[in-house]
Image 1 (cartoon, helix red, strand yellow):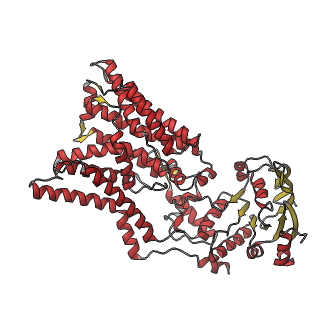
Image 2 (cartoon, rainbow over the protein chains, first blue to last red):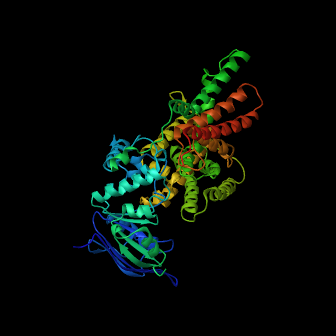
Image 3 (cartoon, rainbow over the protein chains, first blue to last red):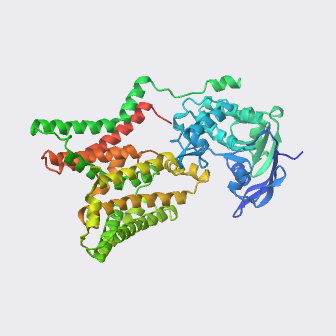
Length: 246
Length: 343
């Protein structure tokens, strides 16, 4: 079976510095793969090579068997791979509907003059959010009035709405309080149940064990090991993150 | 289990009292306008026994003063919503006024509608050129707009004075005078022009994709770029729009006074900026409306005219407008406080 995403021997050097030396793994539909590792282990560099922000020095990325390497970030997004950044890339002063459609807003014509169709965009946002199990309290209110978890949900809803098959999340719970972290973990479960493949970057052990189907531990730009959460424990993961030699 | 967790999604609730206070604060500029109109009316009734508000001449004078402020403030509102500033509008106005006057004067006393139309287009073109340079500086050379437009403020000022030979360019032309001093159904033409432009800018900001991108740009530039919007083009459009509305202000100046002056817009610049902020915009971008700027312009115009009308030394207008700007900022801050911290 062809994996949804196949990452094969990725390597990236900056000047003489090897940020990523040799990273390979696969992601299947409905699976959450956690990339764990300490700061500087190469997690973000790997993600940026997948999303097209960096071009790898060596190695390839395939989606459903089709080569992705060499494509622009826009082309990677339209191939169905969405990256959700820590800053969420939301416009705080706009309502959820406009954020969902940002850059692809819907208009309708009144006497031949185009007007934004705010109502349709709001209704769609409420609908997509409901599918993610989130009730939008006031669809006309700007998203800055919403909780951190709800805001994260909008970013995820945008990915879903535009048919993402793979969602990459970079430390999605880093800036959130505990109840909101739980909301995000629940969202990840929902995405999985819809068959979306997820790559989650984290160095928070409870998150890693809660979300992962597989844990890929990176250390010094290499895969230090791969475990299922049921086959390992905190201690072993930490030891692998610190560089396996300890 | 998951559903349980999702049900306890936290929402920030506002108490009823707070939301009432908030809507009062949202409407403060309207209330303030009514308040100062009432103040001048009572003053006029008690001091002179006549009416301030219900006299056509007063209303016309106020609305012409407001439309001058508006023509500089309309495009500026969009620029400020996008978290930028445009100081050069002071002399986009002057440049357009001078260019229009020079062409009509060169054509002689009998210049017809064709020449007047051509002069109008040339004036707009000169203003648009200033806007293009601003947009290019900010979008492509990453010059902060405060500094970039301060530079073009000087350049446009010099250019306007140079082409005008350092003097006011006076003209004699009946068509032009009719344009600047006529009325449509009793409404002065400058006010009609400002009103149509205000509607147009309101449409752009509130009902088009361009407007949404402008708001989003003011809040989070990275979000707009990631959404695939060409931010550079957006910035150029914003600065050209700002220059053109200011340029129209210059055309109206030349038409009203039968003279083009390089400094036609300079005294209005700070009033225009003030009107935008009184109207609820923020220096950090992402908020502001055209209706707010319209109210802001009228508040300033009423203060200006009212003080002169009531015989107080006109210099008090500077003090009064200054106070209103500070009140506007304090009101904006207390709104945030009532709603609570939004961390």
